[in-house]
Picture 1 (tube, rainbow, N blue to C red):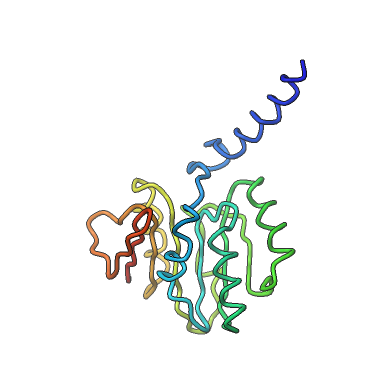
Picture 2: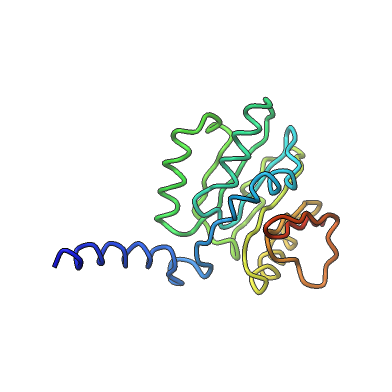
Length: 180
């Protein structure tokens, strides 16, 4: 009986993290061994905007925001997530983060989102971070390209089909940089 009481919450949590009803892309975090390499690929600088599509628990956003805070950079971070459990985790982490003023959390669908509404009117370098499967990469990038020009995309593990990267970093998994 005790085992049943433990099993029900575990199954519930698994459902929230893997349900295609909540998100077509299951939660699978970037490998912690590659965090420094991912942040290097983001090329953090002043007046840059980093948008993490499918931010999950915010590992990349919060680590990069910590680094920019320490370097006194005015880099903005936007974490886009659709899973309500992960959104709660993101908000909880932001509440305690030293650079929370530069972190924005957005409930949204990366395939349908109007990105121009997220971005300030002044010119900033815009960099997207994507760790999604190849069959979703093209759909997501097409949505971004229909709305914006002149941006960078950093992909983790998967390259963009039929597109040559401007930089490739080898870690536990590959990290690719593209300019659009």
